[in-house]
Amino acid sequence: MSENTFVTHLKNMDFAWLALIAFLLLVLVMLFFVFSYFLTLFYDAPFVPLHKKDIQFLQKKLVVRAGEHIYDLGSGDGRVLCALVSGDKIFGIGIERSFLLRVISRRRAKACSISEKNLVFRSGNFYKHKISDADHVVCYLFPKAMEKLATKFDQELKHGTMIYSFSFSIPEWEPIETCLVDGPGSKRLYIYRKEP
Image 1 (cartoon, rainbow, N blue to C red):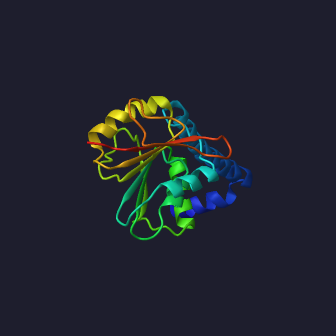
Image 2 (image 1 turned 90 degrees about the vertical axis):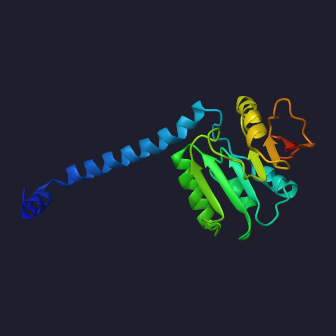
Image 3 (image 1 turned 30 degrees about the vertical axis):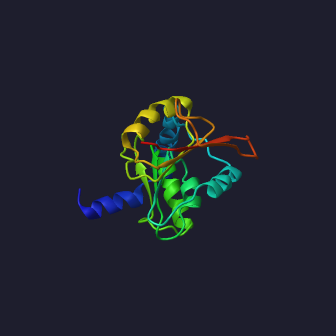
């Protein structure tokens, strides 16, 4: 079919067909995003966002120095790292399975004027990502995930790395501090320091 014939065919095509094709493409895109989001429910880290008061409390507890790396395992929509990464000398790494949540995270970081060199959101399974350069690790994960991560933390994290876990403790680890965060849901924050 020549180009002129194709253009003529498009002009003669009923508008309803074009609208139907556009609608079906939109539905396919929406299904992809919805599937990506709901897929997280079947893993150890379904998307449950922290409240603003939780993040503000974490900001007060987390002392970050220039050049340090903050990891958020199961980073969701990026709200935690966007609040924690400030300035050019702090680096945030979010690890998230959901494509939709990573897209939202990147848009949030852009809206907060945070450079991609300071804040990245990686795709995939946080059990398989290397986190050995972490100075701080933030988690809001189910007990099963925290149990699996205990071994990973022992093997990969360097001495002195700080771990902040909302609601669920790391089995067989002794927190250096446990705080009750006032506000919606009244969560506990368990703070750990990786010892040799």
